[in-house]
Image (cartoon, rainbow, N blue to C red; front, side, top):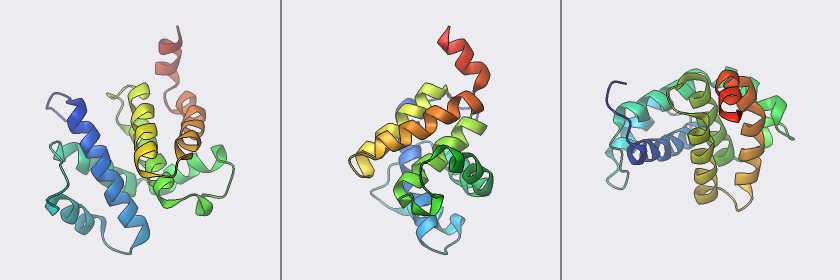
Length: 148
């Protein structure tokens, strides 16, 4: 990703990725078809299409590894997690693992904001608790530096 990072564009890309991942989880459609639909939707504003594509395709590609990371840090089976909460967690875990140019506090804040806006009223607490346990594992060096 060579273009300079634009926080608003990244936020919009994450919101669109949430829409796509949620649809992917709920249907048997191809992620590429879903991504095309999301981008064609006139109500979807995605200015950082490259980031949207990266986190959406990457989340789906890495979904099994992401689930293996999420499962031990949540209090219920992954199948019992609401589809919106799960989509938010999966995207955040992908970003924490693969988008190292994005500081972990940004990933955490964005996930919490998506949960507050789109999931149930207490979902942000669940998302925050899970990611708080994963950040020291996935961003060990950054966390140590940030805590100093």
